[in-house]
Image (cartoon, rainbow, N blue to C red):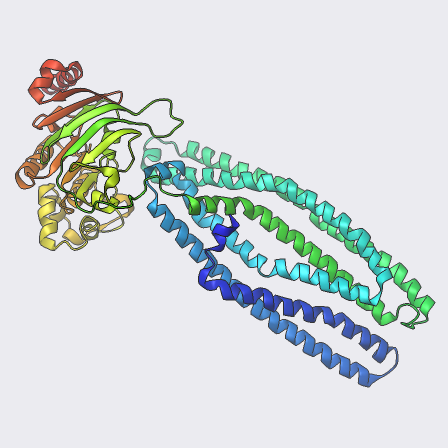
Length: 581
């Protein structure tokens, strides 16, 4: 996990190294200041020597200035390194997400990926900055301050030997208690993001069914869960400050009593025991030691909080696509023929049953194939195996006579254009959305594709025509208009195989027929696969497939299926009866 995250430091390695080095300089100068104070008291104030006071006072100012300079430099390098590290981390995560296939995306929810890219990375950035500053400062301060205190009075240092292990043990108990809570909190954040995303995405449905109060209750429930967990963690962590205060005051009382006794018994002679200035230094070192421990405990708290985000971001970084590129990929698509040879498929190894069972099918290049079937009959699953959005669990899928696993995936997917069930448009102009199909398409090609998809007429009706801005998700166009724009975008790829996955469900029958006739006339060499619920959308196809329960229960032309397939007969009769009525 640490190794994966450390790779994201890259060009910010030197700032990440310079920050702790500067911090060492700052701490070293700070630990010298109590020794200078001791000399001011003993050689200046106690001896009545103003020259010594001025001399050591100037040295004190010099040390403080150098310490300040080191501190500023350390803070600058740490901030620069942490923000750069977070940028690289987000970039690497997002880049890896782009390589995911559908199986990987199914593994991580959208809300979870968003949380990992935002709040998880922000937490890791904060902890990284703290690690290269405070995680260096605290141990260094602890070591140097303890060493200097020991050099003044080994006897008084025994106080630290008693108090510090007890304090460390108490802090360890606090850390181990809060870690499971923080781990649970970040998982709950995924739920919260999912609720928000679902609500905002479906806000029109929420309002049309007057479900605002229920959605607020759902949000409040998840939010309250986060609140309760954080409160529980904070209650446990609230013992941190009293524990530190107890240690501080115990040390001060013990050093005050033992130190005062040593000063009196020595007659302010360092050779015999302890001087007043040295006792003053011991108090300062006590503060430095215990404050460094308190800051170290806060570092442990932040590390404890960050363990879950670090693990979650590392999961994104190490996740590899299940669909691997072949060693010697085929880079040309000969034609649009398709073969399924005893193909079975299931979405995961733990699934109870196959989504597709023993599919055997041959489609010649240039054919028009219609697919019918009830909800859940795996129509979409079947066509998603063609551009290798998933790999078949058993059997072989061939395109152009070549196993799809042997193709370069960019080559295969460039030759297969697919209009999915959920039509997605991105924020930008109509032209920009259409050019997703072909970035180099001319305006004439855009218009021609839109005419084939029966989209040109309504686009010309917009005041800005093809420069009309599409809102995110295409919310300012109707469902039918969105479908036609997506079809036009797919046509611009000039594919050898065109798959329409129920992509004309929101258009009227006349427009649907116009689109199909335009396809037959303008792109006869392209293999066309049309998934539809209406028999009128597929009845003129060269081949019609009827799916039920993941199996092909009928295939043939319209007239043949009316005689041989009872499911097709039932669908036809119900739709024709409705039309006649």
